[in-house]
Image 1: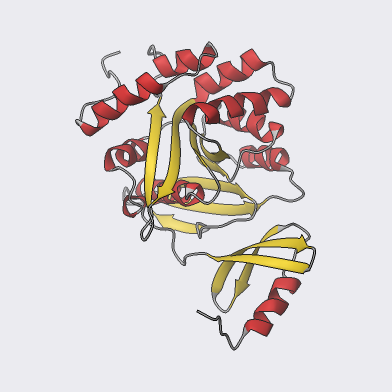
Image 2: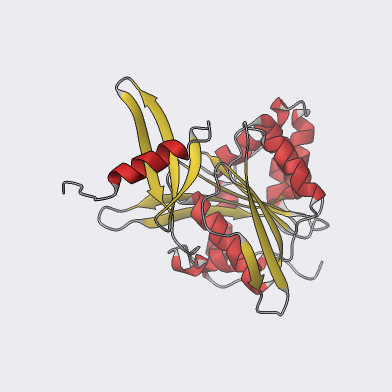
Length: 289
C-alpha cells in the first residue's frame, strides 16, 4: 500500500535532529520509540526505523518452548552467562529483554543494561512478586566502548547485566569476567548455531589478549545456557530454538563445561539428550551432589 502520513516532514526533521553521530540511535517521536539505522547511500541518507513496543512482552508469550523458558526463568538466582545466538532480526534482543523483565518482576534486583542503542522499555522501578524491589537502568554505548561500559557496570554492583551484543574482543573478555564474578549476564551474539556461538566467544576473548585456553576455561566456568533462535514461517513467524544448558552447580561434573574446557565443542548429542529430558518433564541435573 502507498504510504501516507501527515507528519512525515516532522518525523524526518526529528530523525536528523536526533542523530548522535552513531549509525544506530534511539528516537522518541509522537509518544513512540524507534530504533534508527542511519545509512549513507549513493543517492543520499537512508533511515531504517523500527518502532519499539510500549511494554516488554512476557517471555511466555513469545512462542518459545515452555520447558526451555521454565529452565531459563529458573536461573534467576544463579550467576553465569546466558548467551542468545542467531542471525540478525531473529528476536534475540526481545527474548533477552523479556527474560530479564521476568527476573525483575519475580525476584527483584538491580539490572544494568549496555546497549547500542537501548531497545526494549526496561528502565524503571519494579515491585517483584516476592516483595523485593527491582530496578533497571538502561545505558547506551558511546564510541563502541563496550569494555568501558562493562567496567562501569561492575562498579555499580548489579545483580543482572544485559550486554546488548557481543561483537568486540574486549566485550567478550569483560563479559566472561563478569559472568564468573557473581553476576547473571545475558548477551546476544550473531552465530549460525550453538557451537558456533561458543567458539566465537572464545575467539573474541582470545583477541583481547587472553590465552585461548584461559578463555575456554572462563567460558566453561561461566556458561549457564546457550540458546540459538530463528524465526520461521510465512504468514506468521514463530521461533525455532536449539539450546544447551550447563549445571549451575560448579562442583558437579558437567559434560557441557568439560567439552568447552577441552576445546571439543561438538554438543549435538548432549543437546538431543537434554531436549528429550526437558520435554519429558525430567530434571536435567542431579540435585543430590
